[in-house]
Image 1 (cartoon, rainbow, N blue to C red):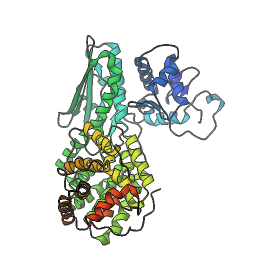
Image 2 (cartoon, rainbow, N blue to C red; image 1 turned 90 degrees about the vertical axis):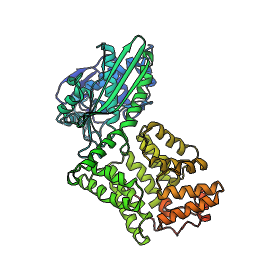
Image 3 (spheres, rainbow, N blue to C red; image 1 turned 45 degrees about the vertical axis):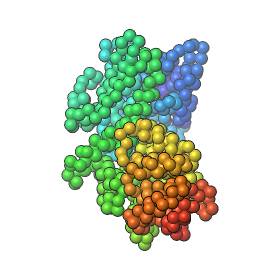
Length: 540
């Protein structure tokens, strides 16, 4: 690591890009030193407490105060440098270091590359570094500091720290511009419209902490400044002693409600606005959401209607990774409805879009679950496919869309056992207002987990996508319900006359036992299967 300037472990000082130095308390400096030594790793809270307070019994409050102090010292991007990993711990994220050796005058300072990053952050309007794959004209939100109702200094400090954690969690969504609480410190106590006007944002999150005796109540609300509506709110009430236990629950709930790019609260509200605007004035994100909406109708007409919206999104923002990934999937879906002679061209379009998404942002969860399907269908590499799918879930552990699509895609990549259905059911718990298309993924996840009765029951009320009908027919075969299986098969071929087993499964190795649950009943129903098409090259 290039040793240049930012943190001096000998003195416990943080030096900002402006030249200003901030002295950390001894425990905070020890904590930062330990995190530097484990940069890039997720360090459990217990390990941090053992390292900093080896001979002293302390509560998580002591750790939390040190984390808050370090983030404040690091400046505007402290939440992104020192990240909370819900239910796991903390991770210090350093940019790539320079390759030049350190000078003698700077040898005691570390994180040289980070100083340059902070300089870039300091000149930005809101103090946030543009992220790889960040979306132009993305929805923007400011998180106001959570204050204690009675002004108690300790609970105000904890509340503000919690709001910083929320900002850090939401900032992991590349399609969302998040303004952290410390940037809005002077607005504490102001209403949502005033905060939105001050920062030029549309969405505002407010919250507070109330203490009465041994009881603790934390509330949070999301406001749409354009419509002056509260879009979402929630309240948590616990004994004071459980503050750090409920903290992870709050982070998970807020991220699950706001974070999903297809079905979250922010996405739904943005889609509503897109419907009201003129087509030629739409942003890349609004065009993307309109394309997603059409895709999820699962008809030949809606697939074709989705194409111009998604193409407009990537034309407006060529680095919009999730839009490229979704466009790639759409071209794969179009094979269900287009003549067979067009399939090679659609495969090429799907491949090109998948590669563009991966190049734009390899850490986008949407890109990773799409690469799972692409690797399985177009490339025939199920090992790589399973790796991409698990990476998507790791990148977004509280994103209901990602978890649902994990279960949805499991049958393609050869994942079986209880995991696919467990992921889908977790998604439904996180997203109680799930859209209708969730039933497709839920039913396919049940099939992958060999819960065939549940698969049929769920798919009975799912949108009539080719996947829904295909897997419902197969599940009926597994249940020895051949009359129902044949009727469903006939409905599939009537609605999607160009459907092939390869339309969904892609290249299936002959004799692979992982796919017998699909191939055997498909053959029994005489669903068309043809020799595999030439395998396209894998995305690099």
